Image (cartoon, rainbow, N blue to C red; front, side, top):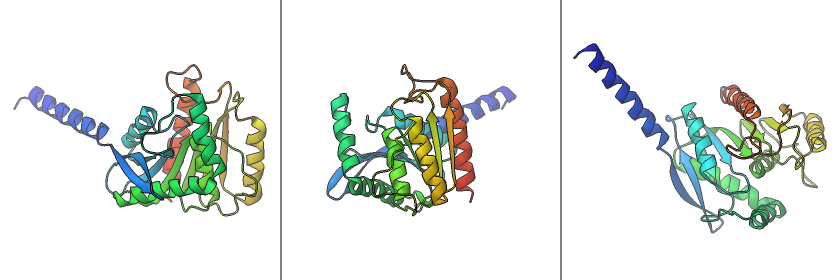
Length: 250
């Protein structure tokens, strides 16, 4: 075999492996308290750290699948949770508000779905003992709910997520480090809320890191939207990658 032929053969093998990795994920239906949900499971190598990825108020869409693929390429398995229910992918603002509002009002249900998603990932062979939760917008608020519940995770990360703590809750039971990635031009989730959360985490003695990005509005990571800010997206993604390395190595 000539050197050129050998190189082409090697290149074909590499491309084939990358293609398989990119399409390895699959939709997964699971039950939580008698209700059906449809998540997305995208495994990396056996025993790889796991990221529980939580969607924004659009429900689980191609956006989360793209992020899952990006995490796979870094060596992480991903279970993208579905908090709304199988087939529920709202497109109208009023419907998005309805579905998120229902869960904001029923925090126990939100926690049950999150825990059910982790349990399903474990059934599929994911390494739930080395787990980080990450969420976008509404999903960020859900991740902080999971943190306050005392769930035994290595870390919790939010991208432009909701930061308010419901009345009667606190971070006294939180395990794992918290990473908050926030746009300082976010008018939906204000810097006052950011500051309040900082004080709560400090008072509770929770290891945390909170970063703001100048000029970044709410939803600054959403590709193709008028709110997308490439610099803030890339910087926050890089910090998240480093965060994953730090906490999953412990």
